[in-house]
Amino acid sequence: MSLPFVLIAAKRAALFALVWLVLSGGSAAGLGAALFAVPAAAVVSLILLPPGPRRLRLMRVLALLPGFLLRSVSGGVDVAWRALHPGLPVRPGWISVKTRMTDGVARSLYGAETSLLPGTLSAGCDAAGLKVHCLEVTARTEERLKIEERRLARAFSQDAVSQDGEDGRDDG
Amino acid sequence: MSVMETIIAALLALGVFFYFAGTIGLLRFPDTHSRLHALTKADNLGLGFIVIAAALHWGDGWIAAKLALVWVLALFAAGMAAQLVARAALKAEGRE
Image 1 (cartoon, rainbow over the protein chains, first blue to last red):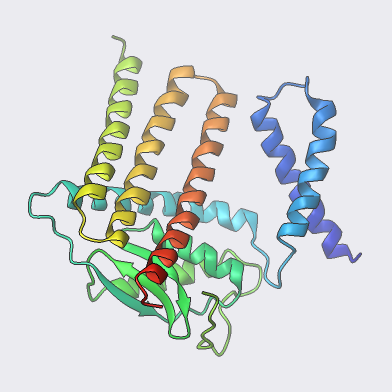
Image 2 (image 1 turned 90 degrees about the horizontal axis):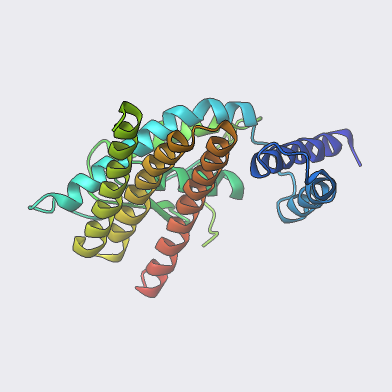
């Protein structure tokens, strides 16, 4: 076992310990169970989601969180407005966005994130790129998705954006 | 009604409003994928407001942390589930 692996395992265990602490409301009563549950959760997480080539930095994710929450609020307001508007201002369309998020975890996160932003919904990818459903296709949609991609890329230890950039991959 | 109770009631009303709007969108939007937009985005916001209202009502840090955890997990699950349903719907339509 290499040192980075031990470090990752320790980090995940710390995260699960924090979740346990929150769930138990800070009470010490269940400490015995936590001593079993926390390592078990860490082991299962390492099996289900082995450390990838690019690691998500927790602190940077937390730094992105406020901005993301604000934008997801505007996503909710936007869709509520469209739903209640008498004229139903929805002109759905598809766009294909070349994404440079090449590994699975980064791409799934990117898809999930854009699905919560105003007007866009990711539906997996094909060779042409990420398939994005839009409530209204505007000139700025793709540009906004690119900005979001750059933002999310900063949350990874290495640049999640590969150098050549255009290697589409089908994981559908 | 105290000021705090008024704030809590207003937040709850906002939360219910967004759930309501999401459901209206689910009924009115023209296709499967547009309906998914309504469900994921509006309901997340609705849950957010209700979580804040509940946290203020109990006024306890641990409960607030637990509610925040619920919201973050729901947000994450909604984003992932929306993608999977969207992809499955595309396949069902035979466009892939």
